Image 1 (cartoon, rainbow, N blue to C red):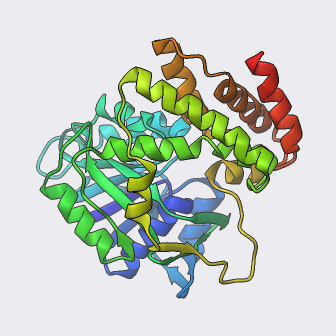
Image 2 (image 1 turned 180 degrees about the vertical axis):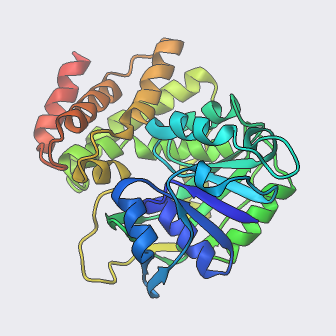
Length: 335
């Protein structure tokens, strides 16, 4: 199978680089400076076992590939706010032997949140969810750091909305030869909703820095409590903390092998790069949406979404709001 990594940033770069390192056929899809650097200098993937430079085919869009192969796998690794444009760009591409990508090819949503699978299923007939536990950082154009060890990441995969099939098992086998653990699960969204609850902390980290204080932990606890209440009201199942802990074990340890301090996660990286967008609408905002649909107030998540969106829109520096000020904003919203 050939893997087309749509969005060769932190997650896409780490997954694509590791697959390539294990001998799999990989094409990276990127834009702007990232595209130019990958095209001219290759992907530099920095891991605990050393830096690896991968000179891989790179395209800015599907037109450059021409007709796709029936053995292609599309891996969607853009942020959710960019999903619609990416899905529309790839859905109609012709596949050798007849039909289009949307009609014939598997599409894997390797993203935070739970919305992209639904968006994809409007167009694509074979959609797979992937719960991504993968500590990776977009360092600079062309350079991605993946600091997990002994595994680079754990990637639960399954059909969306539910089920498994031979394709999921084939993708899993390729990933497990590439420094990942990739359990094939019949209810992958249980794992993605559990991850979503953890990702409710992303906006806190993005605007106030890595959560280390009691204030920050307490604020996340309030956001998560709202989220659990919302999921309960909506009748949505999620993997328990015990299941997550058992699944992860000591398989992924974060080791700053280059001596650097831990940087923030995906939302923090968006602010630090000044992209002008952030995924909070599909993390805290998902809880706000479900809360309004099911009559559950979500003032803390609403406040976190609002602050994170404002930071992105105004291109304010990541981590520049004190946790005390952020708590004050959340307190104001709950009154």
